[in-house]
Amino acid sequence: MHHRLLHRLCAEPAFTAGIAPSSRDGEGVAASAYTTTSKDASANGDLTHVAAGGDVVPSDGAAAANGEHLPHHQRHHHHHHHGLCHHPHSCISNTVRGFLRSFAMGYGLRVVLALLSGIFARGLYKKPKRLFEAAFLSPDVVRFGVFLGSYTAGMKGINCLMRYIRKTEDGLNSIVAGFLAGTSLVFFRSNELALYLLVRALESAFNAAHKRGLVPSYAHGDSVLFAIATSIMFYAYAWEQDTLRPSYRKFINKVSGGRDYDREAMGAVLTEKLQARDAARRRRLGLPAPAPQTK
Image 1: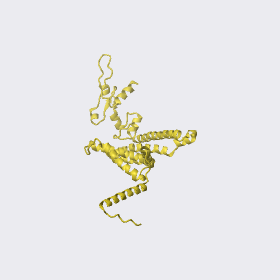
Image 2: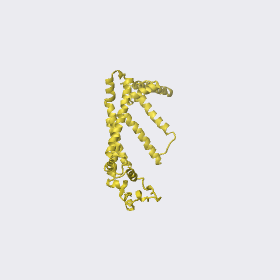
Image 3: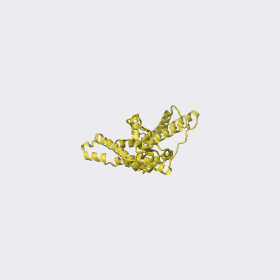
Image 4: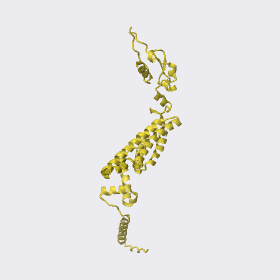
């Protein structure tokens, strides 16, 4: 048992030196009992330890090179992912695990929300069968889980694939993996989610450009952005209400205490005011009134 423990200690990458128990006559056993390292092997990146009996025991480096003297699960992982990947499992296993974990999280979250909505908002607690179907079997609930699982698995799997193909690790791998993983939104169409991520992406892009000195920083930049956005939204609310989501238009009406505008009525009022102003200007300048328009 102790031999196994020492063998495991020797297999640790951080284990490079140690002293075996001293003999009864007080002379310490040389450190070479479990710590002798071959300089030639070190030059090649393969470390070997000489056991007490004189047997050469490969360390992690040498064992990883030939897959020997390692536990079964370590040999399995060694043969299924390359050195640029740092996850403990194989690339395929890591991708599948990512999908299952994210699917469970997304599906579980939507189930909880559907249960709460069904019980408190829709009163389905009196109809357990409909509540179960709405919470656990709803297509939207399943699609959200599939979307989140595919999104995570795509990031992990494609990133590993790019490392394997290009034999390097850089930002291009992440860009390609992120783009392809983003197509998983086809499983759960959501404009709100896409716009939210777009805003976060623009924020990250600005911060990255600022860090590199490409764009300056402004103390009240958030106020300027909010003012620009408000001007656009107010124009749309007053003159292009069909471009706003009905739910957002109702929210503005509720918050401001207003109501939906009739664009034709507003146009008629504005035309009347402009005509009155033009008539007053003509009278002040002594100009004749314009001839009435005939249809």
